Image (cartoon, rainbow, N blue to C red; front, side):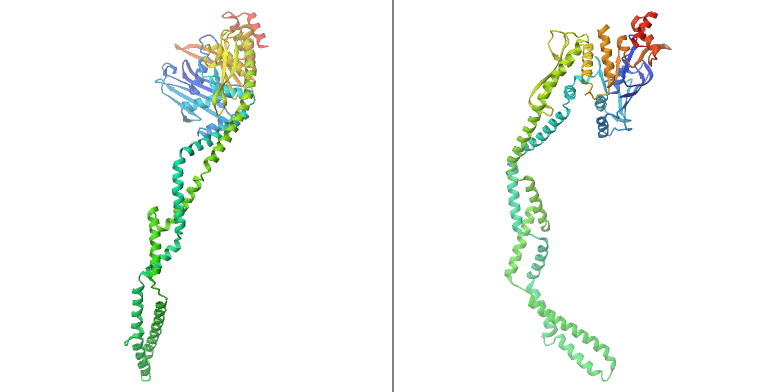
Length: 551
C-alpha cells in the first residue's frame, strides 16, 4: 500500500510530506482548494503525462516521490528483480522530476527508469478511478482477470494459457518443418551419402600415420637395398673390406704385445670397434631380409593415400580431421530425424490443440455462469448509486481461433440509464457515472482484486442524501480489504472514513499555496459541519456533524 508521498514545487504546492494509513481516507476541502492535486501528483509519479505547466510558478523543477509497501505483493517484487530495479526488501520507491521546460525523469528505487516501466509497476500498486485518470478497469485484460478472479477461475485460466503455449510451440515447429521439408530432405539425402562415403573410407588417424611411414619406406625400397648392400661390401664382402683389414691389424698388434705392452690400449679399442662393425653387418643383413620391395603393395598404399586425400579435399579439411567430419554428419542427421518426424509432429500438434480446446471450452462454460452472476451483482449495486434502471453486463465475445486466454474476450458493458443500450465500459462518457460503476465493480470483486491502493475521484458527482450514505458505506467496506482514498464534497461520505484530510489553500507573500493536514476528531466535526451548513456554522450543524461521526 501507499506509505509516504513527498511533493515539492508542484502546481500550487510548495512542499508537502504525507504519511498514509490503511483503511478509508476522505479528502475534503473548499471547492478550488486543490483536492485533486494529490491525485495529479500520484498520477505523475506512476508514469502519467506531465508538462512544464505543472511546475509551480517561479520554480525550476517539480519533484514527487511515492513510497509503497510491497511486502504482500510477490509479483511486484519479482518484476522489480527481473527489471534490475529492486531496492530494500518490501519497499518500492517511485520518483518523478519535471522541469519547467517539460523534460522529466523517472526513478524506481533510485535507479533511472522509463515511463513505461513506471506505468507498468504503478498499475500493480495503485488504481485511480476518476474522470481524469488512468483506470485499469477499462483495459480488456484487467476485465478478464477480474472476472476470473471473482469466479475463482485463476488456476483454470493459467492452465489454458500453459496449454495454449505448449500447442503454439508444437504448431510453429510443425509449420517450420513443413516449410523446410524440401530443403531438409535434400540436406538429409546429401548427409546420408556423405556418411556412407566416410564410413566406407573407414579412416583411422593412427592408420594414416602408419600408412605414411610404410609408403615412404616402400617407395624408396630399391635405394635402401642398394645402400644396405654397399654397406655390407664396405664392411665385410669386398676384397678390401673393413673387417678383414681391421682383423689383420689387430693380429699384428697382438703379436707386437710380446715386445711392447703399451700397445694393449690401442688393441683394446680396435677389438671393440671390430665387434661393433660386426654387429652392424648382422643388422644390415637382417634389414635386407625384411625389406619388401613388392610393387603391388606399394601401389595399394598409394591408392589408399589418394582416396584419403580426395576425401579430405572434398570436405575441405586435413586428413586427421575426417573422423570429426563424420561425427558432425551423424549428429546433424540425428537432428533432422527420419522422414516420419513430420507425421509424428503433426499428430502431437493435433493432440496439443485438442487439449487446449477442451480446457478452453471448460473455462468458457465456467465464465458464462460467472459473468451472469457478476453482471447481476453490479447491476443491483448500481440501483443504489443514483443509477436507477442502469444495467451492467459481462459480455463474452467469441474469438474464432481462440488465444492464450481462451475462446472469448471479456468486455464489461453498461447502460447507465433505463432504456439505453449496453455499451462498452470504456465508452461511458460521464466521469461520475464511470467512477460509481467502478466503485460497484471494485466492491463486488474486492476479494479478487490485487491492487492494494484504490483512489476514487468524483464518485459522489450528482448524488446526495441516502445514495451518498450508501457510497460512503461501500467505500468503508472496501477499505477493510484495501487502502482506499476518496476525494469528496459530501459529508455523508466523509463521515464514514477512518481518517479525514483537509485540503486548503492560502496566500503567502502574495503567492497562493495549497496544503493538506490530518484532522483530529474535533476538527473533523468542524469540517463535516462546514460541509453540511456552508459558511455560517451553528451548534445544531456541529451536533449533526458529531452524530454523523458517532462521537
